[in-house]
Length: 178
Image 1 (cartoon, rainbow, N blue to C red):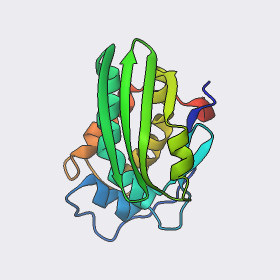
Image 2 (image 1 turned 45 degrees about the horizontal axis):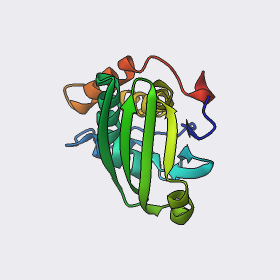
Image 3 (image 1 turned 90 degrees about the vertical axis):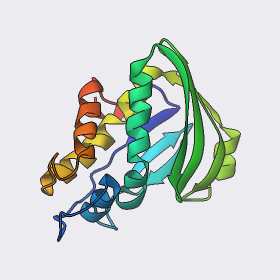
Image 4 (image 1 turned 120 degrees about the vertical axis):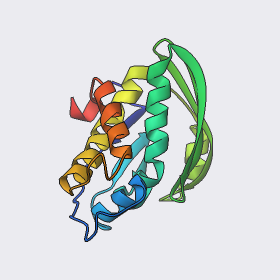
């Protein structure tokens, strides 16, 4: 288990939205999660970064799914993501070969708690590729369960199928959920 990176998915409350008509998965996520529910936490080199299910998780979900797909698709490669949330704004560069994954995140723009400077000083993370991908599973399950529980279907929300497929491909759980 890495002591440098893990994700606490927490137990967010969700609700049945008044209207299931949405055009994107981030709108659906915003509709089902309560504003005051528990946050998820990304722990990056011992710095806790809260992610609001209602706002952050919806904003980053498509990038998380692409990231997981990129990491699982090739034995080696490079990829970059610019997290778009205004309370989780950062650029991460990934480089991997086999199970060795190096993530460089020197550009932290905005994080709840004003920890950007601390995170910039801890910009490089080395972790096993599978171990990193496994950390996202519980968070993605919370989103899937809330969306399906609220009544969203694959027909009404095509991105839901992509989420379910990504979860099928992540074969293990992160450290807190094994």
